[in-house]
Image (cartoon, rainbow, N blue to C red; front, side):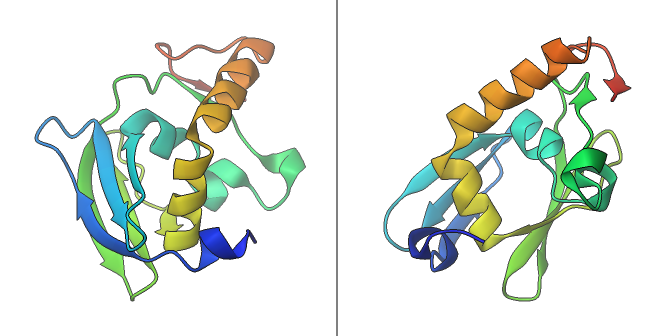
Length: 128
């Protein structure tokens, strides 16, 4: 699933700024990540986005201006994030959020590359 650094991290603070366009997560080792709502939405760990295999994974366009409506705990291991496009099915584990924070730049560039390869963009809705 990930390196021990990723899987053993525990969040001590999760903050949703007033503009609701990012999520700030502070982990118990002091690492802090500001994850954009767009990145969180397009990398959602939901089956709707990820599918059940790499071949089924979808690239979702038109999410540049998505905002976060809600952040709800799921047990003691994750959060469910609700977005203003009504996507609410992703459960973001602490390990997933840590990995996303550590690799945010690469993951976002991969997303941009996927959009371009599939003829999608950040401003027009579409899925492929």
